[in-house]
Length: 334
Ligand SMILES: Cc1cc2nc3c(=O)[nH]c(=O)nc-3n(C[C@H](O)[C@H](O)[C@H](O)COP(=O)(O)O)c2cc1C
Image (cartoon, rainbow, N blue to C red):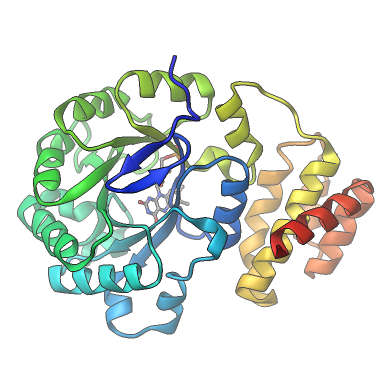
C-alpha cells in the first residue's frame, strides 16, 4: 500500500503529502486552508475566482486571491471562458503568490455554465485547450485543470479531453469523475481516474467521495498521484490526519471546541464580524459531528446571535478548551 506521506511534484512545486484540500466555494477561506495545512494537507486550493470579476477590477473578487504565508503550496483556481481574460487572471494569481494556477472545468452551477465557464467548457474542447495554452504562456508557475467526467451521465469526455489539456500545457489534472448533470448525486466513478492516470504523464489527482485512508491508498496504488478531500473534511480537520495515519481517533470535546473557537476567530479576522457570522453558521453542525456533544448544542450555537455568545456556549460545554484556544492563537501569531 502507498505511503501518503511521500512527497510529489506538480512541475517544480514540491508537495509534502498526498492529501490535497478541495476547492469549495463558500468554504475554502484562508482560515480553512491554513487549518488543513496544520492537519496534514500537502496542498490547498482556493475556491474558484472569476476571471471576469478580476478583469472588471472587483475588490471583493481580488480579495479571493489573498494568501497567508503559512498556506504554501497553494493553487488559486480561476473560472472563465475567455482565453485572454483567463490569462490575465492567471497573471494576477501568480503575482498574488500562487504556486499553481488552476482552471475550473467542473462547476455545474447554472450561472457559471451560462457564462460558458466551468463544466460548460467540457463541451467546448478547443476553447478549453486555448484557455489552458494562453494561461500557461502567461505565467511561469504550473497551470493545472480540475474537471468533471463530462456533461451527460456516462460521458467519458475526460478521457479524450485530459490528454489534450496536457498537450495544451496543463501540468496536472484533477478529476472529479461525476458528470455535470449528476451535480453531487450518485457516486464518483474512479475507474475513470485510474484510466486517465494511465494515459497522461502528468500527475492526476482523484477528487470525489474520498473519506478513508483505505480509499486514498487504493487510488494511489491505482495510479493517482494524490487524493483530494472535499465535503468529508468540512468542520472535520481530524479526518485529514486520520487518513494520513490510517488510524481513527475520536477527538476530545475540548479539542473540537478549541479548534472551532480558533477557526471562528480566524474567520472573523478574515471576513469581519458580520460576514463571519453568516459564513460560520453551516460549520457548527459540521464540527459537532465530532466530539460527542449534546444534540441541542448545534441549534444553540446557530441561534446565539453573536460570535462571542457562541464562544461562551462552547466554553460552557467544554471548559478545558480555553487553554487549548490560547495555544492555537499563540501558534498562529508566530
Ligand atoms: C460547497 C461546494 C463548493 C465547491 N466549490 C468548488 C469550486 O469552487 N471549485 C471546484 O473546482 N470544485 C468545487 N467543488 C467540488 C469539490 O472540489 C469536489 O470536487 C467535490 O465536492 C467532490 O469531492 P468530495 O466528495 O470530496 O466533496 C465544490 C463542492 C462543494 C460541495
